[in-house]
Length: 370
Image (tube, rainbow, N blue to C red; front, side, top):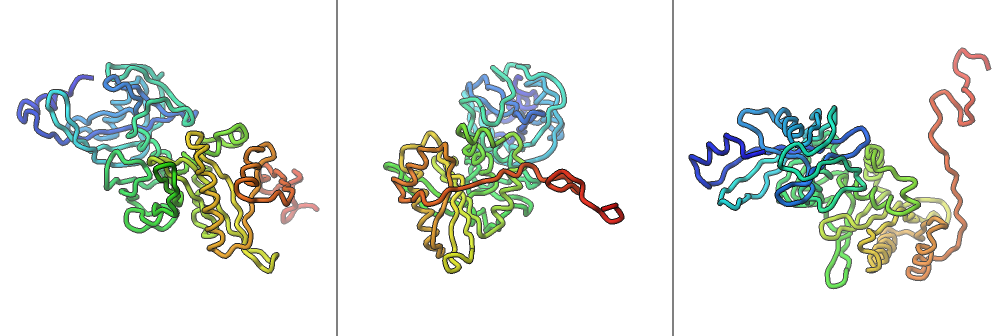
């Protein structure tokens, strides 16, 4: 759409001076869990639907208007997920502007996604594990925050282009699973710094907003893809709350270039065997395909061993699927693990409905015939 009339009128008065404007951004999802994106005509990158509010316009109303004007989709605005002040922006004609951006979750109601104005080259729905490239960094941050939304709005206190893992931000309402200090220092303080060629990467405790990236890592192979479903992040977020609230669990992520590039979970198990020794169980070790072969997986595991030793564990144990032959060689040849046990598992499926035994036979209740 062309520059709004009210901005043209303001420019007649202030020239190219800085204008302070309010923008709105939408993370629109459909019933399949896909997100609505458009490829911008000005830079060719994929982005979330966004726009500028008219004077006096309510944010939810203005956002619904922008969604329909740009994509032909009718959407219901559901929740405010994040608030950012963007860096000052300059334009080729010398105009300067700065935006307060309000990001909302929205739900598809009607309409087919299409290019509906001259701001977009393409418009479409995309699965979360198949987002198009190039996708604007700002869109990634807003998308990640929105997908991790649990009723607490995120207010950024630093750079608006920082990743969702940047420490300059806080939840407006208490609700993060783990206690945090100012600006989330507890959650984001590095546990270790690992060498990566001439540079370094950070190993840190996972936070709630890391969950979408962790799920993508878990699903990033043939075995994982068959058992992980990132379309329903709710179950993973609930599980994260349980893991993060229990001091015997430690879920960590490897952060490289401000993005989650690896993960693993450590569980510290007390027991009576081995003289009442504590043991560490290592689960779900993953490294992004783009970083494999650089020794980061080995560095992560060596840190896990040292952390287990520091906590007084007598043994570190892990299991890996028999089909993961490369992983087995890695653990034995590179890290010194031994194939000392035969692991067994029994899948239990979904829990039985209330009042029904695991066999499917109704249980006796008070007043019933036995």
